[in-house]
Length: 161
Image (cartoon, rainbow, N blue to C red; front, side, top):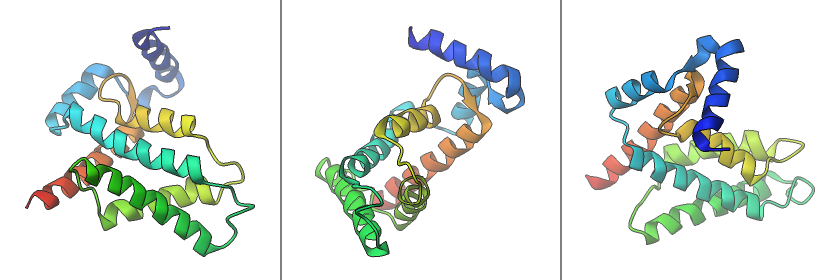
């Protein structure tokens, strides 16, 4: 199934039960333009997020092996630092206390405190839905996209000064 048909199918499902929470593709384009959201930056920020979650999923051994807060914090720090260093090697510095705190809170909730840890495919689908520049998006996903976009943009702006 083509990506466009898949998105049309998602839109048709969402416009029923969730129609008051869905932003159609045309309105999404207008909002993103008004907010000065740049597609290439969305892709870069998605790449950072997916690199981080790839590092988490590839190295997390599960609750049975990571039992202490120190184990969990150490694993998170290793994943975060590995991600930041990978992008520093490419000349892009995303190191930020705010980003670290955001990812810590998200990962603590979604990975470290759950009975069943989501796999990389879950994070891939979730973050692509949030950061996708075109298509159908819920109001919540748009709000999260704009928050993450601004967070990353602020980091880059701070590093440029």
